[in-house]
Image 1 (tube, rainbow, N blue to C red):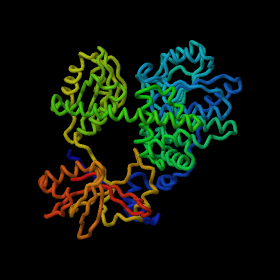
Image 2 (tube, helix red, strand yellow):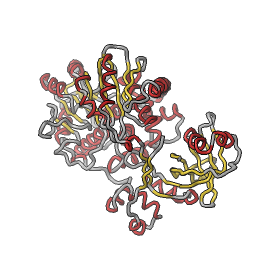
Image 3 (cartoon, rainbow, N blue to C red):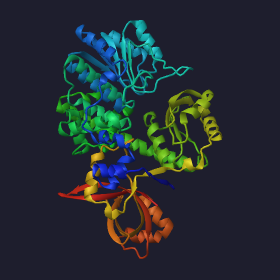
Image 4 (cartoon, helix red, strand yellow):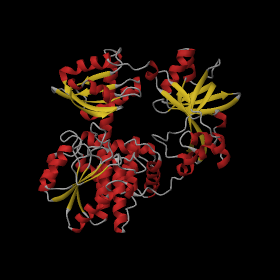
Length: 574
């Protein structure tokens, strides 16, 4: 797929002189923050924001501390995804450390759906709880909050999702005893993009501050894990939470996290391992089983129990991976045949597990760079999940087809919905009939930080770039461009031959790089120079004629057999 490469051009010379750093490093920093924000950006160890700057925090502390004094059991109601279970763990561990009586309820994805429900209120009352505390949900559960009020059980609501507004643009809040959500219009909290676990962590911070207690050291790690897996922007306080959480857990991982690391054969934790290893293992519990029991992996102090739970989550994640791959292959076949001419890909895969429809939709969106909605199930009413691209507001287009849908919700880039099975075709036709995405929006854009010849990507610069970690959404790993690079030879590696080491020449200087995008490399070389050229190269032969490529790459530190070196990892090729 053809990409659009865009070079960022921001003034950086003054910053390089002021901080006495290489111009390319100054360029990368300026692409992320202003001159004035640089010092704070580089200070990952800095203090977190005062939790009492958040609206409702003082009131929530008063209600919770009164419950502690009166020996009232607090029922924490969370969510089944990583953000929801880490938020639940933070509140359970944090409140217990402060002397509160705590229990928890994690909704079942299939039976309960998302968010607190009326029957959960009834359960809490029947089981002797006198206060409900939500995390990562509740801000749109108007009926349930009113029901709890009628039943006489107060609710402290903590959430981080967008808030419903009336016709005049004013916030409409549920009838809870207290509402904490940094998206409130009257809230001036500096970090609006906290995840559910981040908000929960700030509440525990506030309670500790109010009582003179201490926040258990491990809790910031749970907030970091939730932040990465909920894909919040890693800027400001979020970035400090993730950096400090990783630092804490790499020194002192909780028992359950250590068990997950062993199961996944991880030596240390990074943003990548949070997002692509640990997070998916935990998420698999909510997709294919019930998190009510599996959340114990985040709470237990028993290594034997943690081992059993970690092995179960590993097994469930492997099952989820296999199911997802089958779903992607089936979906891709449909996209390339029956849906070939559609811009918006609307699919119905009857045998696909409901919990992975969003994963399949996301992969189809990435593979074809088109909006995708995937429905699953054989009942008359089917559920689906959608993922979109920049330039196509999926939620707004679903609103325009309100009459066709039973339920829907979401935002411009993602949505959940349900529809009568016999109306799926009608929805597909309607969305495509009213789809007016400009041609340039159907082409993925890759933002480049700086032009940097491969021979200048050395170990010193790679070391300096680590000061900008943790990388993630909003603070992406730097991307450098090397243009008109000649391929001398290449070597395929790995059991599946899915890694390639290239010997290159740029401006007369030899250099080396690796890539994990072997299929893209094969496509680019074979289309331009012929399949026979690729076949010769892939067997180890040297290039017989000039094979020139433009490359985008990341610069990293590679440690292998006690040796440390700079490594250029190619991420885009043309």
